[in-house]
Structure formats: structure tokens, C-alpha cells
Length: 111
Image (cartoon, helix red, strand yellow):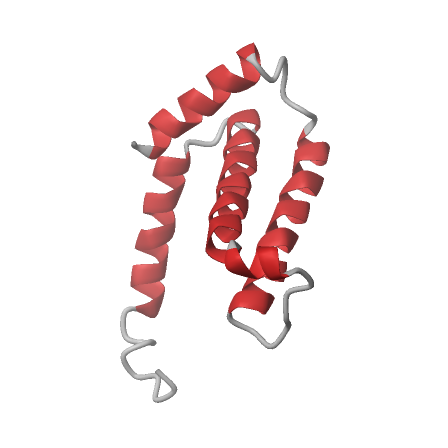
């Protein structure tokens, strides 16, 4: 699936099943909440925190996948609302990073 196609699919879902988009501010708050859920799982899967329930530990990767998908969904909603083509934006971001970091990471002794 191309990113542009994902934006169309999400828009169709919102306008048929979701009824309408939440406001941009509400979606920004939801995005923050979803990123927090990814962070919580990352801290438990890869960090020093432990799971509160054994069941969550056993399903950790599945939960992480679901939360990352939730982040992507809300980000696409916001892009649609702000009339941003995420495919173009990602290409521009990669070009910017390539130009800026072309030698930076190659010369980083920490890497």
C-alpha cells in the first residue's frame, strides 16, 4: 500500500464509519496519547520496566504492533485534515536529512 492510498482509505473510513473527523486539536491529543502507549510498551519490552500483568508480557509484540498502527492512523487523520500529502512530505524529509546528514553519521564515532 502506498502512503497516498492509505490516506484515501483512512479518509473513506472516517467519512463512512467514523462519521466525521475529530477536530485537529482533539486528534493531536489522541496522537500524543497513542505515542505514549507506544512509549510505555517500549519501556517494558526493551527497557527496564516490567509488565504489570503476565498476559501483557506474553502479547507484548502484538500490543506494540497495534499501538504503532494507532499512531499511524491518527497521524494520517491529521495529515488529511491539514491537507498534507504524506508521501511528498516523507520524500522531502528524506532529501533534507540526506543533504544534512550525508557525512555526519559516517563520521560519528558513537555509531
